[in-house]
Length: 405
Length: 168
Image (tube, rainbow over all chains, first blue to last red):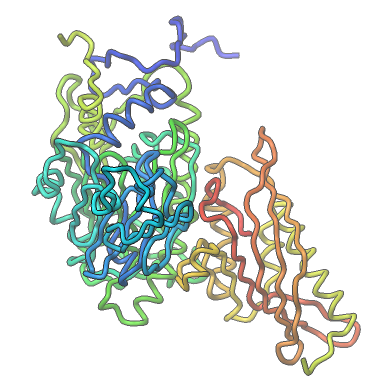
């Protein structure tokens, strides 16, 4: 047995989240991935706080009466398209006694009826009928009991919600520098057509799921190597409030004869200089356009150790039938929960969650040039692009750095 | 139904189902691929009941030609090896219907359940669902076998309990 170990743990591991953050900016305390009490604080300060959360795209509910349900943390949402074509987001809860109003994950309704006491809501949330109301409390007014709306806004059809009181306007929160990349990702104009879903749970803390970096891509993904798939020129850009944007040129893969059906990795997109586009919005929305795959990933932090991801795939409304078919084939097989390239990411989410139950720090190295300054300028394949997001997280959660007053 | 289902064809189809389940329960991807016909338009799909119900074409696995069935074997055995956390499966099926669909071809549906055991862990249900198959009898005389021309696995889970490595 080797006696050369240079790291012997001599501390006392508590498993509790630290209330003081290390001074070195490239260290993340691993306790933050396994702490159940911390998750409750995160729900309050982040998920129910002054942050926008992507919960869907208008193309998922294209017709009047279409709806989908989704959860923000533990809060059930009902997202519906009204007769006026407006998309509204409501708490999925009857305003009478709080019964869950809609149980289906998606569908189409003329109105929403609560089965408990038959309160009936219009698609715009108005309370249209409530049997027995003559005997209701003296102060009851039907017009005061419409469904409760959650503040929502859209960007090129991307539906975001916030439950915070002081959330900045959406465009300001996204930031000017994020918009061109987000536009490219959403097909330029957001006129998308839903192709379908892959939905899966990961046994991982939401921050571990979200902490994927650009550095790992050529190292983890055997598929890239087997296909002789070299990355092209590109950039990684961060915003002060924790968003990360990637764009990279896409050189066609040469394949090396590895695949019997290379049509899987054909690129029919018009602009290879923007072949790979990723937008990661704080806290946990990752969206990718890689080759001809348009993939919006709507994620739910279920607990400190369960993250649920709904991979939604889209075509553009103007696509030819042939391009749609190509997108279906590529979307299903390349970058999803079971895709040739990204199944490996799925495996890492869970393995990093297990490994992070040990004491110590997650150590960032690639691209670190200062131990005291949060990086603002990083290269395409650095892992330091994640540090501004961690810094934003630290501030929102109110953790002080060691030595900070 | 114009064509009688012979006992021999019936047995061959049972043997195909058994070979399929045995291949996956042993993690033998080459044996899995061998249950499919060699014709170029042979297909395997694995999709959610939600996509299926809503007519959404996207799948979890979308192998719309024989070449991609072989490529899926390569994904599991060459691309992902050493990355994923190992798990074993047990498949159980129950044939629900069988109808002749032309010369030596049958449309067969079966219900399935897949149990899953991660290495070092306990057994849980991975998902259940329905196989919708187009099965072909190949060969004649005493020597014939059944193969899948198309297998569509429609799984019930709205949200799968983990990431998936092996086909259903």
